[in-house]
Length: 450
Image 1 (spheres, rainbow, N blue to C red):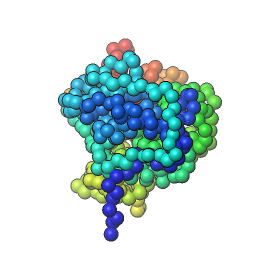
Image 2: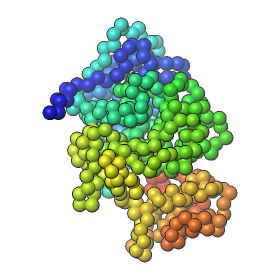
Image 3: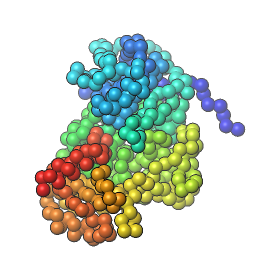
Image 4: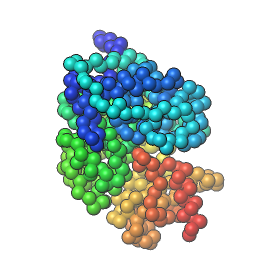
């Protein structure tokens, strides 16, 4: 018989008022201070029921999320903050306001400025940790719909807590006073789970900054005590390895948002002197599986999760996924709770009866010595029904003929890009992804220049 789920679950797992919840440039923040900041902000928040939390400081973002939970407000987590996205958010939640820590914020919503308390309030002997109803809506996380309108996905407290518990167990950080250093924004689902909730719900600490460049990542790691966990992406990790900077050792590296090659995983483990665990998931299901990429291509499902195949689609269910959810990837179950991932179904390319995937082609392109970054894609303005692959590459030491010859040795000639364009850098966003609109704009710019 399945035991009943608790009606309420604690906001924070730290048991002592002096337990460290975050590290900021001026030093540690204890649990007592964190809860005092949460209470103060919760009492200051205006009346609207939906909050666009754009705080750049990760600690302030975490305080904002917690204050919203205490006040019963819902956080809005879109993938971008463009004027069009904000307009669509206003339509979705007319009472929304923006919580910001920037004086230069130009988001077209009523704004509430985060203010620092200035002094550390005395911590009580025992922590009065708020309990949050398991069914309370924490956030709406948005994915891009087929029409361009963001599609909301509701996240409630109980499933999020179970998801983070499964992640902490898989990463081996249960009972360990670890510190998370994240290169991904906390507003992204991966960053929300693995750089904010993982610390709050597993006794860890948050590094308040968001380092992006290699020197910043090295400085952030050096600023926090061990054990320390670097939560990053393949793009940031590849850039870190290519830079001429001294990187302090970590105790664990976590990667997500795009497939990571085995070779890169091996190199990261050697450079940072620790294991690397890759996370597979999506906005709809949250974190779903992990693998030690340097050792295996197989993914292992998170605790309690199961996969089933129906009508050619793979569905995730069980564990923290309360409603069976179709996955948008090509998945090959192997044995038990393990599977292989063959790329996104939407990324399949069929040319003259032969099939490949953009993920596979990108992997082969970026594995060529001398390629700093690169991506295949099918331009949006193809109208004759024939897929013509384009590739944009950053490879300052290679010419077109050399690169095409290297590609011929790796992929079927049918999938050679036409055209192959060279750029100084690719327009990646904060999570290392390449928005299609940005790729198309770069392709048109580079094509006009040739």
